[in-house]
Image (cartoon, rainbow, N blue to C red):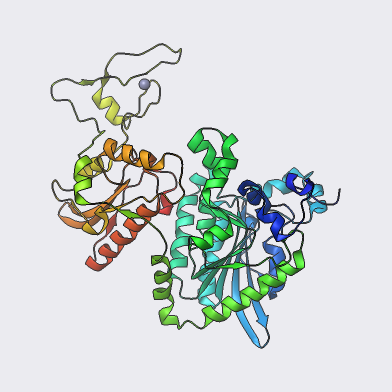
Length: 479
Ligand SMILES: [Zn+2]
């Protein structure tokens, strides 16, 4: 066997024509987007001239992001660029890959294509270097996601992802991002905050993989096919939702089967966009970048009357009891041998343990937005922003029962959305305050949240006061 074949490639009647690919299920299109023989970053690097690796090191997983100075030449034009590319594995040559798979030490280095803190650190340094050398930044996206291990979290991966996003947002040189294969989650988002985002025709771009989406929504990975169906992950859907700016055609068919024409098409598109971006006057780069981002996103609005119908203060914080030293034990507490524990628990002990049950590890308190307001801010100082109060989630993906779930969450939490922003003071000092409600669909960040953060940030900048956003959620760098 000289090539790798996905199940649908072996199906009778399948061809590599565009019509044949169009007929695949969304999940098959997802599989196609990371076919092991699809060209990887280092394959696309061959269309550039004078490529020179920089910033390389031997830290774990740092090879998953590769950084090169290079030049793209087209006719009489030559653009100096800094390539920051995610290389999801050692090679797109299947026979070579089969050999390498027998070498566990070599394979471990590639960490299944999931960038580690060391990889993002390299991207951070490359962005700075590109600015110093006045090179256009090109990020190349191909990842199943940022490394989710405890080691990487402890290594500050969330901060490093956040730093990448910040530096790309502030970069003084033009920035361009290209999704070549599969771009998943924070690993992709870290490097796609650019002046333009392009995607290869048969790539996919998503906030979460269909398997992980299925396991969260349906508590099983078995429904990944259905999750893919409703998640709008293809390049065409990304373009329709305006989260990418252009599709790079794979003119003859999928890139793993028609490599040369895909590489040529990539080069043509790079030249077109580098030409366009290099013409932006330096003093307008930031404003144009912000304008692009302002256009992204969809949400609904809600009326004051509708809000008043469910609005109430909800608190899950356990206040100090007045006369007794004990508070009631939470429901379903079992000790190590499975015996039910009913006795009350000492409040001071609970407080010292951050409200985690010492018997079973249950967390008593999941702070609501109102709890944060009451615990952190000067009493009575919080005034919700009128600019953010009336925007609520819009169900563009038509997830099952989503609208009903939002309504239930509104009644449960007394808030219109999972996120609330307003003006307030802390010890008399003015702040712009933002808080999440974990009890509102797990505090899920959606386009409404992003829009609220955006608007609140603008208010904070205008007033010259610090934004203050206590987080609860996984990898809050997205905020
Ligand atoms: Zn317990």
